[in-house]
Length: 113
Length: 113
Image (tube, rainbow over all chains, first blue to last red; front, side, top):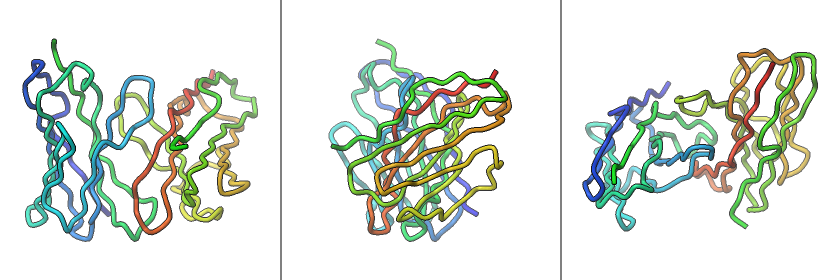
């Protein structure tokens, strides 16, 4: 089955700096890669996603890059703000295999004011 | 309406109790999921319903019994739980069309005494 590794497990940055979280996956059939943000006391919320036919996607301060050859994808957050502090999970799935998403172990991001 | 609503938010139950968790969405999604999440861990898939039929059961103990009465509702019936079942229980839903975008509810925080 699919295996997703996520690094780092914790990340602390100063407000205004950039943050990068990286994930690798094992199944070359995976073609959908979402990122979720989970704040304390809440469920995970989708913040950005990318499909295997795209190399990069941006949404304001957030971007995701995908390298299919190397089987890794990364989340980039620029100009970090204290409200970006949360746990971030990457995931990988095959879009025709409804329900079976494999999550990374999560990264706890702390943005210091 | 872009929400997945879960009730109750918190639940405390004894090992002999029977209780139910409820999940509701009105986005027209036809796939609904139950996840279990322990502290500082990613969500673990328990069940998937696709078009009101159980499509995935991840070898979950029979003390957890899912039910999908209609396309908007998902229940999780609990009976004779163990203290190690204490966790955050998350519901999610996905739109039809073979896309694994998942929208999560805020979860039910369950404590088994």
